[in-house]
Every structure is written in C-alpha cells, then in structure tokens.
Image (tube, rainbow, N blue to C red; front, top):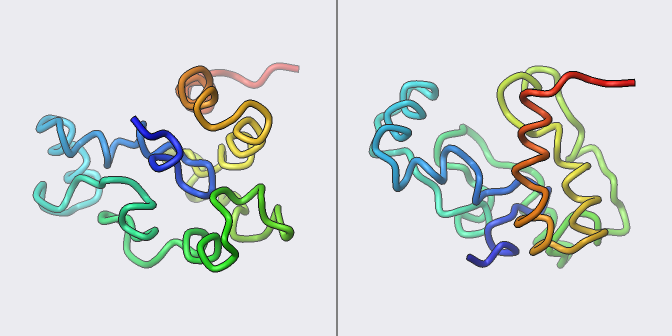
Length: 136
C-alpha cells in the first residue's frame, strides 16, 4: 500500500478510515451508510488525495486538501503557516471522528516518516484516542 497516497495532508489515515474500509466490506458499508443517512452505494472512498479532498459521505469540501495542493506540500507540517486554523480541532467532532488526532499524527509523520507511522503508530493513535483514559 502507498501510505503517502493513503494519508490525507492533514495527517488522517485514509487507509484506516471506516468510509474507505467499507468499500470492500459489505457489513461495514451498511453501518457507515446508516450512520451518515445515505445509501450503501455512496459509501466507499479511495482516499482523500484520490478524491481531491471531497469525502463522499460528508457534505461540503475539506479546506485542508486544496490548501495543501495550492501550497505544494504533501503534508501540512511542510507548510510555512503550520499550524493553522484549518487544522483546529472542534468539539462536535471529538467523540466520533478522529479529527482531533491530526496534529499528533502530523508530528509523528514528520519525526519518523509516513511509512513507519502508518505501520507502527497510526492504529495505536486511533486506539488511544477512542479507548484510553487520560493519565497524568
């Protein structure tokens, strides 16, 4: 798998996204369709870069993808304006969508590279985000 191609400029792992995975999993496709209130035929995504930042199940356009393209960067951390408000986390997405992991993912990608992050850390970041308790 081409992990660079399957990771959004913002650091979200398309390769581990339910909308992407549902493309090859009929049971997951039904669940995702129900969650988004759309027909199962509309579920499935080849990845952010492949659809130019337009997720098939989300209305509107992601502001990050066109910005990264315009600035000629593969990942947001390569931009002179990083971090910017396009990466800002929002409370209404915190419980169900791992958007609040973007900055952490981007810093890991910068530190260890996209391939190592994808193989060694991406799933763990998502697991911690959804299942672990905060520790001091």
